[in-house]
Length: 411
Image (cartoon, rainbow, N blue to C red; front, side, top):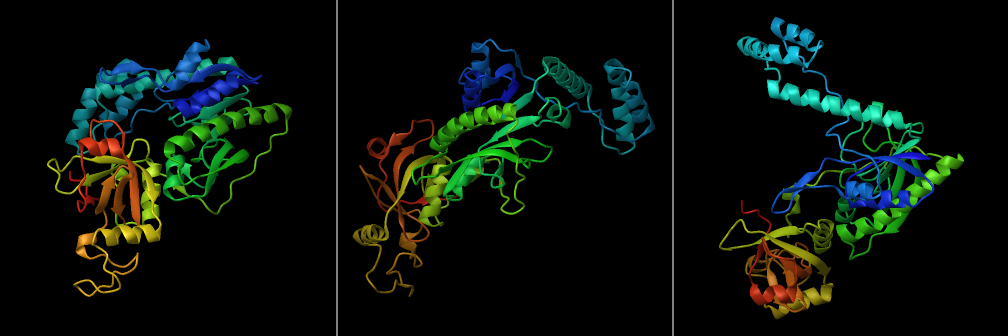
């Protein structure tokens, strides 16, 4: 089959490599534009583009595949401006200044600036040129994997068999941008990859093929990503083989069990130590990389964030023993304020607030969580530093027992 491939990161590059090794013919590749990277901010090609260039494939890197019309604005001058705009970019630009003045005087929202107009029209031409080039290739199917751009209906309709997406979840669970991280964060027992027929909705299309895998207690976003990337690469080749043979059937997604994997925001990386230890551990593993963040209360730089990794939830007996050894868990009697604190899960007295460091040594940094269980952090990282095993980190940055990690940002 003649395949156009659209993707950007390593996850997608694995699939492209598998397709190049298959009996199918990759005729072109779409990838996002080169981005500045590193200290020198030099432009760097995406992993997918690097694979494509090495294979001698044509690569298209439009900023968008959508053709965006001129904004509609109120006022007689703006209408004239739009009419002129139909005759060419130059006419629109000449009238843009007058349109802005009229709109401002009448209290309307100002139309786009001259520069915005030029940029929009350049991007539109880029999208049109890309579609024309792809149409000339007469592709049978487009394979999409973590491309990062929305595909308009004109793109979805371009290949003979439409567009197939490699999605890293068991749909309809975790539609959206960050399915790998959200599955770990939620404590899901399993996940997988699905080969989905793309349509206008967000990951709503029917699924033609699925592969499943368990999520282990030590899986991070990195380890699960790599496993799913390999599974997705195998699955898309199998799906195209079946499509070529006429045996690939699609099943509509269930109406129940729909969840959305929202894009990850920086603030969501912060650890909330008041949550149960199991949830905190899932949170830390879900955001590795780049690393979940926390702040040491009373640090000289209140904005300095530590990154924490490799969490292990200690069992109840060990958690109790650590707190007793630290002198912060009374034996079967009440705290000074009358609260019972003799069992894990009881309300903490002030000295054992969630986030309190009970001990820090070669095995790791032991921290109390909201349910009274203790979480052991086996690796840490300071701002600007490297990720280090706990014993190495503590040689240069000791963390005394009784110090406390806080869930607040310090911003």
